Length: 132
Image (spheres, rainbow, N blue to C red):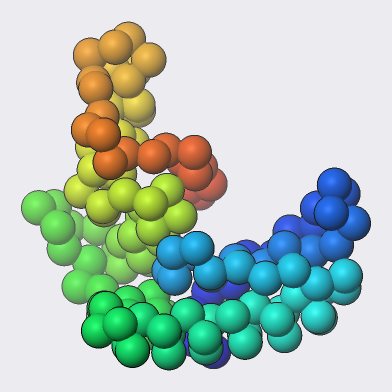
C-alpha cells in the first residue's frame, strides 16, 4: 500500500489504532502493532473498492503525487509535501491550511483577526520542522 498510515497506541482500547489520513474515515484496530498494520491494509483496500463501486473519487497516495514546489511563491518540494500532508491530516484544503499557518505565525489567529471558514478543522495543526 502506498498510502501513509498512522498507528498509535490507545491505552483506553488496550491496542493499536491505525488510520489512513488520505482515505477519510479509514481506520483499523489491532492488539499489536503488526496486526493493526495488517488490518488497516485490508480496511484501505475495502475503502477503495467501495469508493469505486459508488463512483466516488479515490485520492492518489501522496507518495505518488508530483510536487512542483510552486504555489504563489516558490518553496522546497519537501516543504510543499509536508504542508499538503498536514492539510490532509487537518481535513482541509492546502490553501485554507496555509492561510491558517501564516495567520497563526503572524499572531493574527489568536488575536481574532482571522476567522477560518466552516470547513477548517485544525486539530492537526502541528509538526512543521524548521527549514533553514
